[in-house]
Length: 287
Image 1 (cartoon, rainbow, N blue to C red):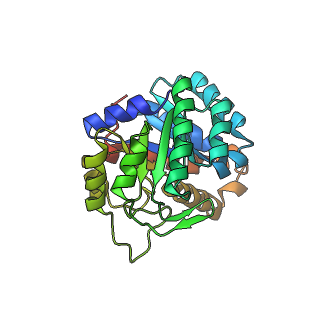
Image 2: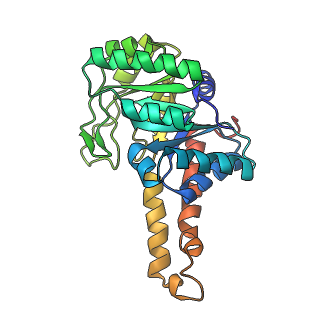
């Protein structure tokens, strides 16, 4: 059964580890991540962007697939199904469809409007037992067509949003989505420390986990980050494994063209990458 991300993240924050949010794009992705979480006794958050939701034929389709897998694969570790970078409208659609967690990305609104809309969603999510993630200060890079440069959030604004009663807070600390450019300045631990001091027990979220060096990730966890989002890295290893299979001509041998065979190497590559991330985040055996 799907659970809210609140309890798993509160536990992670108190225990100085982080839970991975791994974005899903299709059945292979979802199955690979769920099985890896179960095999490693780790809590997990399945992230769904609005674009991925559309690609997978709508939020209800996603909920049906995930709930079916939890039952059929006997998944007993805590699993949250989370809308990633949701618009105000998408949050309501996902709440209705049966998601257990949503992120309202109001970072592009003036702070007053971000506060007003977040307040309303806090009320709805509390009534329905969902966790709610809010964002302050745009995360850099590209996320479904939205491009930002990796600026840092204002700690006072973070406190204003945290005080509304959200379950977790994503704050820009120089992190970006996608691959990091050569001239990336690294994470601003100063900003993170200042945010953590003002927001106390609130689990903080690090977006754009791909390409941040492991020691930076571990330092961020020590400063209050309890949820780390991974997407691009899984896409890269999936594509690499698929390319290798085709380039080696395996699709031309016997029934090698069967989609189950074509996608198997990519599926295994995702599993390996997710396990590696869970080890770095410290979530193994924390279910």
